[in-house]
Each structure stands twice: as structure tokens, then as C-alpha cells.
Image 1 (tube, rainbow, N blue to C red):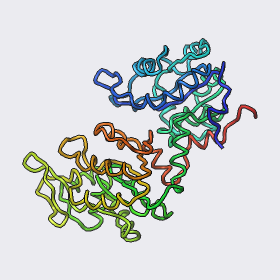
Image 2: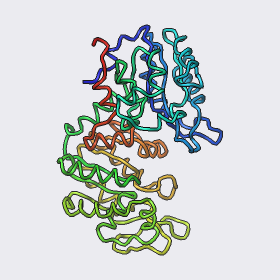
Image 3: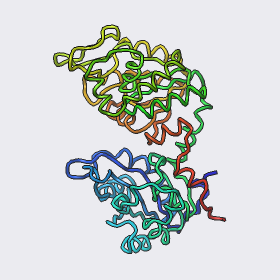
Image 4: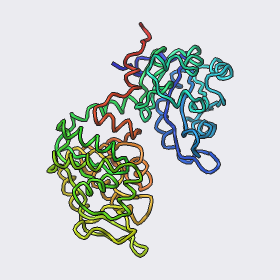
Length: 404
């Protein structure tokens, strides 16, 4: 059983709060999108209003990437969102960081530097070993409690996610609590239940399809994006060299065999695209599956109108829709149609749940809303939908309690 903020005696308590604010940044390294910060405002506001002394832990980017930057601009934006001062210290577990945490008063907030600036945080450990890292051993002595609100990173087993709740009383923040409540009870939602699996994370999507079909959680699985292209090839469709080369270059060629096995086992429940959109002579052109392959150099960039009509009929009868991944290259105006119309139709279902990551980014870009729940996590949401254990959640369940 995971404790929540309802069980935390906040006033005067120094709380380490792990959030996931990993966000796009501009060329100068400044925050370019604050959607992930906004998600944590309720948790942080509640802790501060209840008199907590809050030290925020988070990561940004990966070593070597352009977005591997300081959290200084995140702290500035967080202050604007919270409507109160937020300090920043360019250290995470050093004496400088500990002094800054010790100096916090009731209702004060401090953002510590990017946890991934330290190599241990980019590694995964079992909880006991994570608790012995420099990050945890350095910072835990100045904290009274730990709150994990970083659902989007909960599928990782890194020190800031599993080490702290091994040595400190751990609690789920409001984002974490909501995500676990919604995604952890998917089997209780009304049927028919339809999963829409798109995007480019082919292995994860095939894992989800296997899991939900084997467990009877899905009445239909609709495929789109690169996922749909892999299933089309598995079904014997010649998508042409451009699409096939992309799948091969991504290392997904072996996934075609897995998709073929799925079609053999559950083909009557898996819907494949009936047409695709390609770029021809500078504009969108739709090609029926029976007319494939397309011309040389043309890649399948979206689903077409015939597929949309087919998928709408299935979605219109659904009581629950779970979406993960866009239907095509929505970043290009000519290929937004499939994603926009598919998502618009899904919002009419009584229950509509969106896996985070690229799917949430597509929603924001296209201005589509009206869903029952939009997850903050991509990989974490997928794992929950396949009933896998999330290391950060397990650490919260197994850690010490304040009254132990």
C-alpha cells in the first residue's frame, strides 16, 4: 500500500520531492515548454501551503544531448506558476546543497540542480544499492520525508527514484496518485475497450498488444504510425523501400515477425490501415493498400481517409478508448489529418485515456482536448498497461513509514 500526501504531516517537514520536468529547451538552453512543470503545480502548492519545506529533485535531458542543461530556467518558471519565490542552487547533494536545504523555512521551495549531472543518476540500481549512492547518502540526512510525483520516470530504477524511499518515509504525490488510480484500474473500465497503438515505439506497442489481447482487456487494437506500417509488412503488404528502410534503420525488422505472430493469434481483433498518405509532388497523396508499393522514395507518413472511416466505426461503438502514439508524422501540416481526426473521434467515448510522451505532445500541438485522462508518462504508462511493475512504485510500497 502506498502512502499519499493525505498521510504526511507536512508542517515543518523537509520534503524531497522528485518531479519529472524533462522538457524541450530552446537553442540557448532555456525552457521552451512548461507543460510538465504545470503538471506538478498541485502537488508542490499543497506541500508549500501546508507549511512544508520543499526541495525539488528532477532531471533534464541525457548526457551529450542538446537538452542536457541546468534546471535554473525551470526554477524561474516554477516560481511564476506557483506564484511564490523559488530558489535554485547549482548543486544536488554537496555541502552547498545541504546548507541550502537546511536554510529552508516553512512554505519555502528550492530547486536542486539536474540530478543527471552526476553519473550515478544515469545508472539503474536495485533500491538497496541505490540508497548507497553519493546522491542519496549525501542528501537524505537533511530530509525528513520523500515524495515521488514523477510518474513519467517511474519505470526507471535510478537513485533519485528508488534510493530515497528506501531510507526515508515515502509518499506518492498527486500526479503519481492519479496515474496509479487511473491506469491501475483499466480492467474495471466499461467495454467494448479499444486500444489505438501508433507512433514509432514499435517494441513497446507490440508488448502492449500482446498483453491486452492475451488478458482479454482489448476488444480491438487499431494500429497506425510506424506501428501500423510494421503490421502491414507483417501482413504481406509491400510498403516500398522508403518505409521499409526506416523500419530497418530503427532496428525494428525483427518486430515484423512478432507482429505476424500477433496477427496469427488475434488477427480478427487487430485492425490494420487500409490506406496510407505519402508526399507526392509536394502535397499529400493517399494510396490504398491494394495499390502499394508507392513510387520510389515515397514513405507512408499518415493513415488515409479510408482507414479513418474504418477506425471511426470501431471507435464510435467503444465505451473505453486507450490511445498511445500519433497516427503519422503530425509535426508536418500535411500529415496531421490522421492523428487529429482519430483523436477527435476518441474523445467521444465515455472513457478516453491517453498515454503520455509523444501522444501528449501531439495533443498539445494539435489543440485536441476532451479526454478523460492524459497521462504524464509514456514508457511508464505503457508498462502499467501491460501490468508490469514500476520500480519507483515498488520502492514506495516497500520503504519505511513515518510511524514504523
